[in-house]
Structures are given as C-alpha cells and as structure tokens.
Amino acid sequence: MANGASASVIVARGIKKSFGKVHALRGVDLAVERGTILGLLGPNGAGKTTLVRIFATLLRPSEGSATVAGFDVVKDAVALRRVIGLAGQSAAVDENLTGRENIEFVGRLNHMAKKDVARVAIDLLARFELTDAADRPARTYSGGMRRRLDLAASLVSDPDVIFLDEPTTGLDPRSRLALWEIIENLRREGKTILLTTQYLEEADKLADRIAVVDQGVIIAEGTSSELKKKVGGDVVEIAVADLGTLESALAALKILGATADRQRLRVSLPAKDGSRTLTEAIRALDAAKVEATDVTLRRPTLDDVFLALTGKATTASEAKA
Image 1 (cartoon, rainbow, N blue to C red):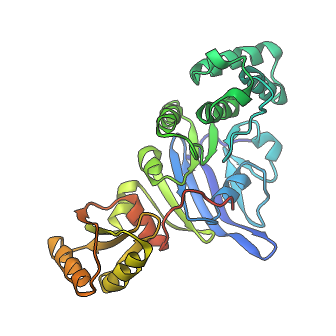
Image 2 (cartoon, helix red, strand yellow):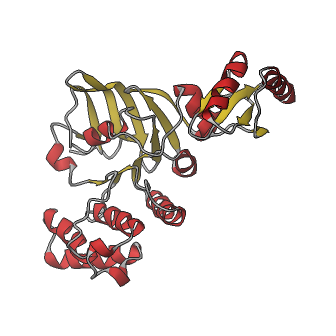
C-alpha cells in the first residue's frame, strides 16, 4: 500500500542497471519531495532515461531498490502504474486516431467507465487547448500539439506522480513556453514531477531542485542557486570564430582553469578576482596570438555548473540511455 505520510514520493537507493557490459547506472541514490519538480540533468549517455524507465516500471534495476508513491517499482509494479503518468522523449500518440480517440484509448486501457472516459477527454482537450483539433487525426498536428496531446494522455488517470522525459525536445520557443506553463500549473496542483531535460534554461526555470548525473551516478544535487555557487564568483567567457581558434584559446587559458563549450565556440573560466582575471585572460590570449570575437564578464549560469562538474556541454540531442 502507498504510504501517504512520506515526504519523499520518489526514492532510489543504490540503483544499478547494466545492459551486458554497459553500465548505465552505477549506484543512484535519489529522493524527490512531494509536490516538487526535480530536474535531472546529464550529458549524453548519463543514464537519465534509464532511471526514468526504472521508476515507471518499464525496466527492472540490476541492483538496488526504488519506490514511487510508496510502491516498490518491482514488487508493486501493477499497482504503481495506476498512480503515475509518463511522457517519453517522443510523443507516443497514434497518428491515425484523433486527439479525442487517443485520450479515450488511454482511458479504456486504465479500465475507466465509458462516461468517465468521455468526460476526462473533454476536460483534458480543453486544458491543453486542443478542443478545436479534437476530432482531427493526430498526424495533422504540429510538433507542439503532439507533445501537448502526449502529456494530456499521461494525465488521464489524474496521477500524483508524473515522469517527463525531455518533454520539450524539438519544440519551437513558443511551444516550449506553452508547455512550461502547463508543467508549472501541474506543480501548483500538488503533482510531483521528475523532469529530464537537455535545456539548462528549462531546469533553471522549472525545477525546485536539480540533480546532475554523469556516467551513471549523481555527482551534484541542490537548488539552481546552490549549484551555481559551486562555480564561485563571476565567469569570464571568450567567444571565438572556429574550432581551431577555440583549441588555441583553451590551451592559452588552461592555467586559469578554462573549460570549452565546443558547440557554442566559447571558453569559460572562473573569475574569482573579477576584472583582474579578465585582464589576465586578455593578456594570455594576446600572448598566444588568439583572436576573440567577444569577451565578457558575467554571473555564472547552469551551463557553467554543467561544464565545471562534467567537463562536457549539453548537446542538442541527448542519448536515450
């Protein structure tokens, strides 16, 4: 039976998961408090989706234990599925069914009465601004509409715990903002949400707490502000024109603790002495004959935390491990 008294609704203890010789999770301990959003961040192949699948009873852990809403993810899997919602990395909708039929189909899978299914479908379609498209085949929906329909379908049984695995990947900025508002509203309703994302801005905006996963273990956890403090004071950021110049800049600034974001063609370093560090960086670049397109001194962001902790930048496409 679920334990309503526990403050931590999602709990993992020593979770390990291997696929042959590949160790996706190497011992994860995690707790998510009731009515909060935990943002799960990590580079490619860090194990984020594997952990979500274990919580959602889609995978069995190789070692360790986990509970969600008081239910053991292995022993109580059938009962647990009735109280959780899951929206995966890609919208799991039937393109040949209408929006209404997709939601009603999920309701029938949950053994809901026919009249209740119809009522819930009307309510969810309205809530996710899909009423006008309710009777159109899902194949005619835009990417943002499909993601909203997928999230709506995950809420058919009014779950207390929701797993959102990169819910805004591939969406345009407007659709992403609309989905953010929906997720914030779910938290206001008291839902507990575990959110994996490849967008650091998304975690900064939505998550009450953030856990950073790398190579199958959690290497840092805290609020956005707490994690940013790990970087220290201000940050010097140098932008360059190409990868060759980036490598030269990184070599010139390595002694100052520089890290590189090769996607954005930027080198960052902690500016513990503020403008003095900025001056030293410019002198080092001049001495190495490295030309920068921009040099700024700014406050640290989650990008800086991510680079400092993992040595990697997030990518536009996360691996599914």
